[in-house]
Length: 204
Image 1 (cartoon, rainbow, N blue to C red):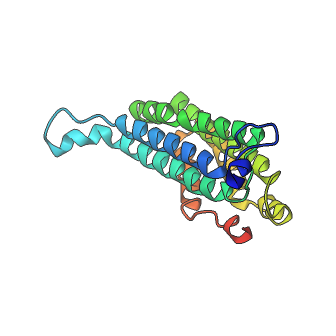
Image 2: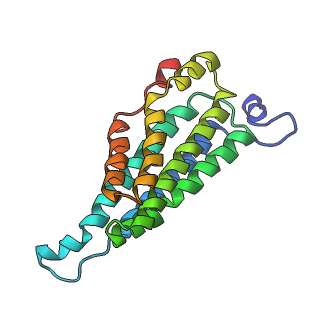
């Protein structure tokens, strides 16, 4: 009876736990990764040279897979910082998943176009908007965090986050000048986030 009451708010509505929100988000991100890899079509021939046209798609998939994997990893740690899922957190979480769900489309277009200007702009823009959406989710979680002051200090000194925003913004600009630089900047972000963010773990 006590547990039953704990899972409900004062107005009688069932409270969504961070674990349930995490499970939902895990499922969505798994589907996003699956859709992304399905964009790589099986080659028509049986010769090794038939794989060559697929290389741009494959490398784009690698970056997209690493990016989604990074969000999944950091998202998991972020939700551990709160024991309460507010409406703000739920909407911020959906906002993040919306932008991440567009990665398969942008990834496929970029790979198929072999680095066209507008596909590059779209891909970098979606990555930038995903980063902005994660920042909003971070702020929403911070409002209900267990160690709010410590986490606020950690978030304010987010060097990797600032580098990511700057790199994605520059990637959009360089897509009109020299797309190769855009790809270098996007890969740079993927590399610096290869090591998971441990700031939240240190404060819970």
